[in-house]
Length: 356
Image 1 (cartoon, helix red, strand yellow):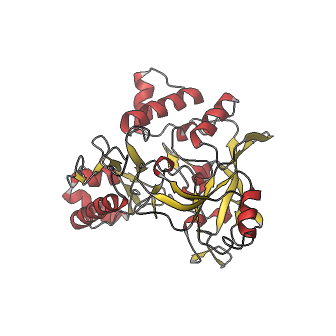
Image 2: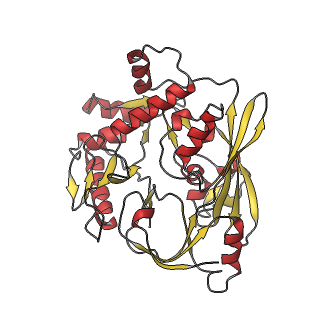
Image 3: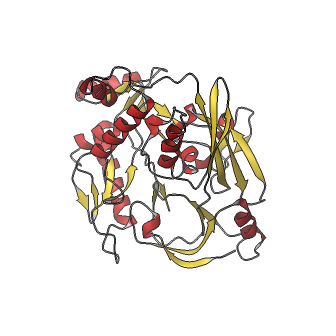
């Protein structure tokens, strides 16, 4: 087992924040995790699992042992009549997996194209875009217990998926249907993820951006590849490329309110962007709320609000030699935005990224 010391993390987080890991181990199989747990120096040490670094804000050097997930490999598990089941190692790029499934003739993930990060991070966040969430295509996953070294499997129900939420984001306070108090935050490292792609394939086209592209391209019955291309085009037009401008994607969750709360907001702000959900509650567009408070294009130090999408916070500096945004600046900006939105709308926005 190789333990790297004082490892620069700037290129290992998409915000391009300058920080170091005091100690880091690259995980290419469960054997690497078992080696950590067998080492008397690191067995009981706090651990931080790092995938693609696309959903994290580093506020300083990372003191827990960083487990950098780098295992790779994708394969077909089963091609049955009702679904195609594929498996990917947690260290694979999520977008690469989406592209690979289409190349193999397995549609179903195309709406989730170009989401940054690794496959292993996808269940943690229950990623979603353009009408599809990970839980809609999830089959099961394998993870390893970071205390015992035991490898275990979870199905969708056991992952307790919610909106940008799962069992992996909670400690011991989450209660299962059976009444058990569980939580796997900082307790497990995801090794492999399996996805079930439904048959027959049906396109998911209920989003305005996709409907607009259907009309523009005069394509009322798009293929999965066409939807993939559209989603990539739309995301590239709206969102900054982390390779060019440091960012962590959508910084805040879209808040959900009651129909009564929404009616009250509409009475004051008739143009508020909102979506009525199946259960009668209403989801508000966090980006619209932030923009309405005048934050688009504003900055705190080198941390700023993206000019094209107020939901995205960016690193306006180079991020080289400490000249970019610090994690402290990012969080100061985020808290200022939260205060503005709360004072105007009575809604507390919840950040998506993990703050370390």
